Amino acid sequence: MNDLYNTLDSKISGKVLEYEIQLTDENHPIFQAHFPSNHLLPGFLHIDIASELLNKKVIKINKAKFLLPILPLDKILFIIEEKEESYKITTKKENKKCSEFTFVTK
Image (cartoon, rainbow, N blue to C red; front, side, top):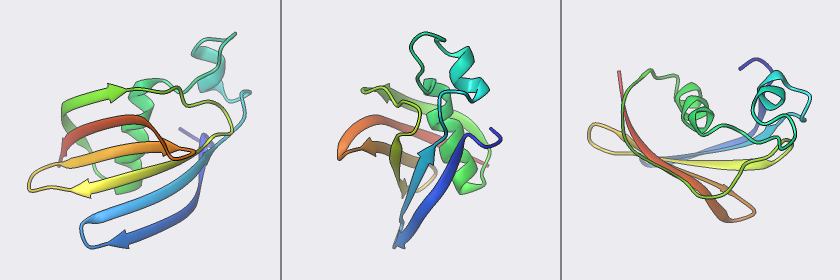
């Protein structure tokens, strides 16, 4: 995921972590490969980015919902809630939910 995004801000409040990232432009190989004529961030990369932000390896995805497309240059907020044995992640852009997923890590 080299150079796919930059972290703009991060906050920790109890068991909730927030990371604001900005994606690179449509020239990145990910966007060139995933719908060359309609660039968007593949759903699995929502999960991979959250895993990378947490510096954890995903071993199981319990639930995943993708609601709005994430596009090149979008600023995305990752809201990560630590649960007993998993993480619940919500992504938002312009205060609208893009995806929601829960995974278990090592």
